[in-house]
Length: 435
Image (cartoon, rainbow, N blue to C red; front, side, top):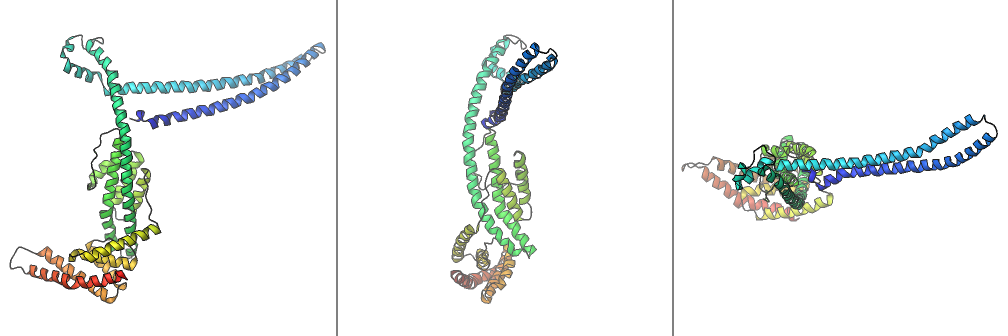
């Protein structure tokens, strides 16, 4: 496939032309310098010839000395000739290199066409249409009608195949552009959200247990979707680049297994494969910041950008987040779903950071908020959390036994949350939010 890449062939030709250009300039420089030397030698030679004639008319003993001078002049005059020969030799070498390069391409093209359309395949297809040809001529006879027809058909088949493939590659280039543009848009939004929620992890550095839970939660909830999206898109881009068929299906909700991710990574080229493997390892690790570093590396390797969250953009996003979260707390009617939302809103009010926490970390977050909240608000919040935990335990233990009183207790806890604690906590939190 590389032999058909325009960029690749141009890239190969460019160094040759550059070298020829530099050699030509060097040769010209040598020639110019030696020409100047030759002109000077011509004048000096004229002087020496005059001297020589005078010496011949005068003393004959100076002939040896004059001979040595003429010998030196001959050596000097041979310099520009040598420069011309070297220049011509370099030029001829470059030309022969181009011829060899062209011959190599032609042989590669012939070899590829033979591989694509071998004699056996063409003959098999012809016999399927005209089986009578098998009886004409021997199987080893190169002049047999079947052999001649196969040789006649191959150039036309190769030409047709090349045109079709070039058309497909041209269309694939546009598809690749759209594919990567779409990925970039999704990444821009995702990495900003990821950086926003990552900042809340710093608050829990002194609590390793809770910090570990929060890191794992972000890796699963935010890391997995974007990693799978990146790997699937890069695999599609590789296939389109190599002229392979790719379905235009949406993979928004596809979640890959570890084996699926590893399989995709193996097919990626060189350094990109190594970066992708590091991304998978970070996803299966324990630190969310390691995933962010690995994601940044693979995006840079792919020619995509990792949009950094600056202070101004962070303030804008937090304002939007606060507004949206306040609306959710205000409209939420399910007592269990209400708890993580109200805790996230209180955490935002206390630390000015966006928090995403699973249910098992809510207790630790509430404990951290104790010194940040008014005593009355904290008491209602702690009571709400305790009642919710009891309700969930009763829901998990409920059976079909009619004599089981768990259903009654579960109903009592739910009514207590809906009728007493939720309205009171909403009033306290939303009042603070409005302030």
